Length: 192
Image (cartoon, rainbow, N blue to C red; front, side):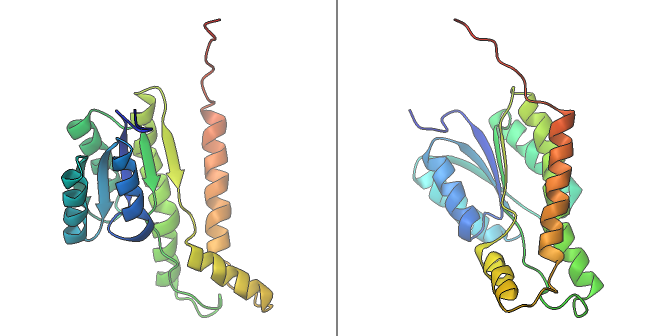
């Protein structure tokens, strides 16, 4: 039996890179996968690969910054596959890079909406669907390796003025901590 047999997963940012590989891995482990990204052609190719290998997948193109899209992904998982067990919120951007004084407001807002607001929107609809199935796994990829390298390089060179990625992480961590405190994990009775 595969690790994800009879599980349903959503993977955002699935048209390339980590999301693409994760969707294939989840499907290879038995999950039915809803793949999401902005590029429909790449999603269609991924669904073709997964189904050709004997897996089950469906694609929905859209923007993770759009609340209706976050809701539609969950509704598609429920309608097509019966529910939701795993969500890998992978879509993100390193956004407009530069000193704080050089980053435009629109660049800042786009990065926050892509990396932070989209995580909130995903969780807003994913958590209730998972709770309907008595739990699940909610996964967030908050920083791409190249963003981590950039932050480390900035730190090593003494440049301390690129704060937006760190701010996003701190704000999201605070939100997630508050959400967990309001919804403690269920306790499971032992059958011994």
